[in-house]
Length: 335
Ligand code: SF4
Image (cartoon, rainbow, N blue to C red; front, side):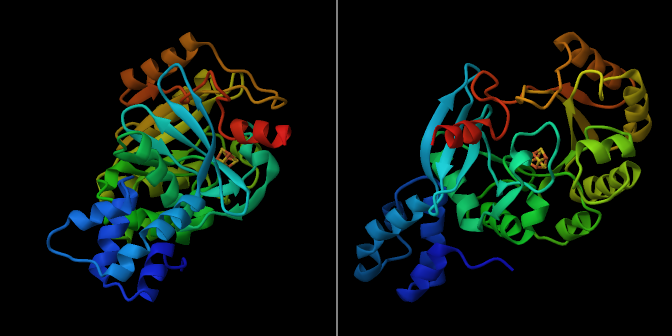
């Protein structure tokens, strides 16, 4: 189980009622001052609680403090947040009212094409720290969609990620399909998510249909065969109503061949899924190249023509420290 939210703990100590906590949590998650909760005519706050608002705001601010921001020419923006202990994580303001949040500092999976995976896991984020990234984003822009696709593997920090998802689906008033749990896949994960009241959409990071290659590209992902993951994901998609978003980082001459296309058609034709090809963003020293844009689009077209919905998606803010973890890596190198 995750720890109770900071706001709940502080308000309980002040004698606040659950309704007070709910209104203040809503105000925070909306990116508005806590005093916004005073506008609710059906609930009055005691002077003791109101007097604590400035201190509470400061404490919530400290959960994730923006220390760097890079705006991409595509309109996205990559934010680097300092946590209270000085560690840093990235979030990205996405086009079409989305925010991509981190769930861990570092990551244990060690994907060979990912900057974040290089440093291993440093620590899990708390639900508070995950929610703080959403609250910060909403101070800047409208946010209707939260994607757990930043630094970290959400299934490795399940209690805190699920706690954050529950809060976003309730007090945050996000539609369930607008909460996207990105994962390399774990056989036990799908049933755990299905048992939740708030069922997020799943983005399954597959990257290849070949089990041996997948074990090389994602060296410390939980052991599971591609076919098993696809079966479990399909069951989740049908039960939750949200299509599985298959994530596929396109690496030239590694996973962009016709053999992969044929296997993708075999695996996904008739399934409730969409395959997203994401051309590789250069990561220094990774030893990979991105395929041409023509090849990426031809692959998506081929799948779509063979009954598998598919799109090419560019990582947000490719022109500024584009790949996940690069902004943090450069900040660490400067310090
Ligand atoms: S791609 Fe995702 S799962 Fe893989 S190492 Fe990077 S953060 Fe972790």
